[in-house]
Length: 531
Image (cartoon, rainbow, N blue to C red; front, side, top):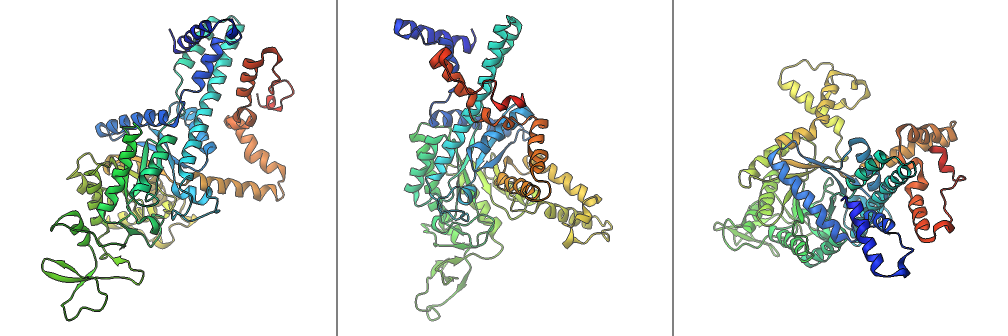
């Protein structure tokens, strides 16, 4: 018996047990509503998606070509449309996730207005967006199933048993739009207790994977900006444990923690680490401090002095009471951060880099994997990188080492449109196209994401529309640039009433009121122009 039929049979049994007062309730309608609402709570979502993510991680360990991808979201509708597009173009959501970016929330969702990525936005907006994303994904399920139920009804009305069977198979084999979300908790929005409380809210909303970074919470900066300040390992590990406790308390034992290190671009620390014995994590953290040796007579009033191997050292302290690391130690610190995180409860790593360079990432991952062989990365394919210029320069440098003639190129001006059709640019584009596959194979990157894609696509498409609509093209700018493309490409949103749930509402009206239902999808609904 199919899942659809079994659900309807169960509903029929319950209805019969409740006597004639329930006779007007249709068991099949109940089955349809239940299938359209598979996930009742965020915790059910978290449990389901955590299992998916763990399976994907195991598959990647066996075969690096099985890497995963996601795109960042700042609104439930955006996430919904991505998953609808994935199913439409690729037939399956397998190994395709969503990313919830703290940067996007700060810039797009804060009640204070647009903010920089500095954890100044309301922390409650993070679980609120997770819940919103899953609300829209569940609505995408309901909408697609509604269309399949209509196919089944049409086949029944036509007496076509073959089509009925096909429709039932589609319903029973339906793949949900609900996928894992990697959710950014920034630096935890406070101490370990604050991190734990927020993590619980995120998990209750549906998060199966939480990403946390090793910056100072109240000094938090975007990973691609200057002025980043890291915390000693023990502080960061306390927050990793806080997130794990939150997962365990909520019963999501497969919950995934991504430990992000910003040490590559962070030259400052707010604290000197506590150390118990030479060589421990605190001692290793302090070993990167920019220090000068002093004597008791050369010490100044207010100096902070550390004793290392019998030597008195004065760490360089800035006016803001921050301590400076030695230049050129970023990669060493990233490796130490990563190993410490994996050995203390983290599942995945995130190393924030200043450019997309597989060789740079690989050099660190190789050292990490020498200690933790299963180390895997989440990597930010960031719009903060100038991908075109970076890769053209990478090709230029590689060709220069090979001794090729580069007299036709100016390395500084390689972004210029005049190079777009050149052999160098074509090779750069080929490397960009293969970046994720190569990074998964060579640099241990399990998950590739773009943090802010729709921030940029929304700006670009709006600019193009505004330029034409308020110019000479007028309404033609919308018709050619938007609606005609929606129709030609089969974009579901061209029927925006359907996308908003109007047809689902009509189904419910009919369930509740029968022939008396006042439905919106009648002959005068202009959406029929797009049928």
